[in-house]
Amino acid sequence: MKVIRPACRIQLTAEDVNFITRVLGERMSEMEALSRLLADETSRDTLLDDERLLRAILEARGCLSISTPFYFYILVRHAFLRAGMSDRAMADYVAAVLAEYSDMEASRLRLRSNAPPLEYFVDMLAALQHCDDTARFYLRAFMGNTALFLSGIFPDRIRYRAARRGAPSLGYYTGLGRASYREAGEHRLARQYELDGIFDQLAERFEETRCALNDLRDHLISLDDHDPAVEAMLSASARLWS
Image (cartoon, rainbow, N blue to C red; front, side, top):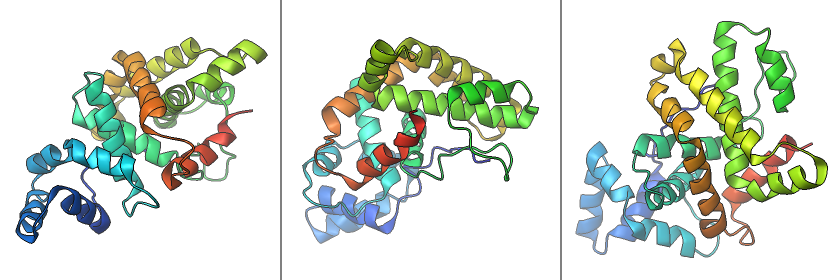
């Protein structure tokens, strides 16, 4: 079982660095200076907050030569800043969740290597009744991530299904996400992975986080542009709907 870590802004690829220096640097000397600044954590974080990077991503035509984690970090970070949410680690974690959900296999959860993946919340809630303490942590983290992903990126679909089919409402996803992050944050493994603070924030500010992702979905991601990262995320999400 895998735990998602907030590393989108840390593990930049060579393509990411080239993109940043090309967008922010006008002359070769500036590009060389930017490359050195990107090696420093504080300077790197400041550079990644530059709105020119966001505009370059949104205005790009064709396929961007940047990594999926970096792509989602820039989008999430600026959506969160507009919502008054300034914690970089939290933005990094949520971006990592979106990047994870762009990979269908990587986002599946199996409590045992030979067990079928858990696909629906009803199955996950049932599994909580008999899994051990360690598996419970991974399952709760996964449930929180899944509730946030679906309610943040597909709120209209949830509303439609709730109105037409009697499926769970957004309030259900919010309650389940909060409870899952809260329990995961209290677990010893959350402290070991240094995720306890992030999980506590997500439990406390789940609704704000969901709404910020709704804004990202509505105003930043144009689903008609066929962006490869977005297309992959949408394809992977299809299995989560019955």
